Length: 176
Image (cartoon, rainbow, N blue to C red; front, side, top):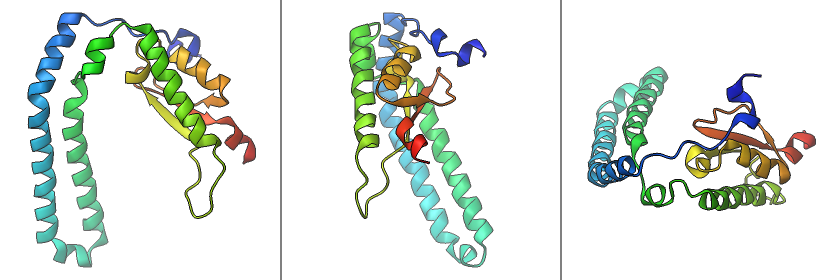
């Protein structure tokens, strides 16, 4: 098993320098409103284009599907522009292991409550898989997520620990 796939090697991320986080936080405060305007403008442009090309879409399902793919791709790129943003919580709690443990415990408990809830009629099935993003566990590492989750009945799915840890509710796997 490669090192990046072995949960035993999934330790905490290195603590980022305070000055860098502060700089990125200030840039986030300045750039976030701009990114919101760009995202909204992109969305509105696609809505206008969709209204103008509705006639073509009535006769061609391929055009509509392609238009949807282009719109999704463009909006995903706008969202990805903000991937370097740093929020107040990250700035304040960088390197605080206790904070990240509490966040992991809370999110795993939340997903466990959702997955273990009995199915209700006329409601969607409870989720059987979940993804926990790096921002929740960077101070304690993916190993802590896996240990906490397996203790509550989750199984590890193939994951890229540099981005997220993917889990499956073990009871759902046994039921199928």
